[in-house]
Length: 219
Image (tube, rainbow, N blue to C red):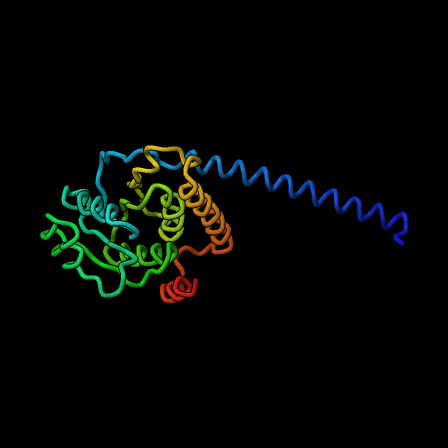
């Protein structure tokens, strides 16, 4: 049997643990609501350009929007990061019409990135090699917070201009009204939290490129 002192100690530990669990739960809910608040619900109209444009792959609409921005002169070059091995600019041209000229002259393809961290590492390498100090970032609306956080961590002195691609589903119906959309947003929220936690322990934004690429591939 537990002694009276041991029972009191156990009860105190249990009470503290329960309070911490409640506080963590409240923090997660408040954080999620803040995350939802910053998610764009409409596509933006850019009123300025940048040195370069970066699009993170994940859908044809993203690439199309990025090519439109490039063709409109919003950036000098475009990086498409996270491209499937074997995909060429000719393959992209067949799927996205009317952009042959800019695809030939001003588009770079990155095949190394396997995830958002990898996208950010390759973006840093590409921007640094070309002396770019401002970038338009093109990705889906739900992915934008994490993409911006990762790229800003890699390029803390660069000006980042978000250009979110809003899906028809996210634009038309609330995120909670569709199970797939709810799971997608929740998943992205927890990935965002994990990324922010990792960045707290990774204070050197411009670590050796090869080490960071290896880390990105291992994740």
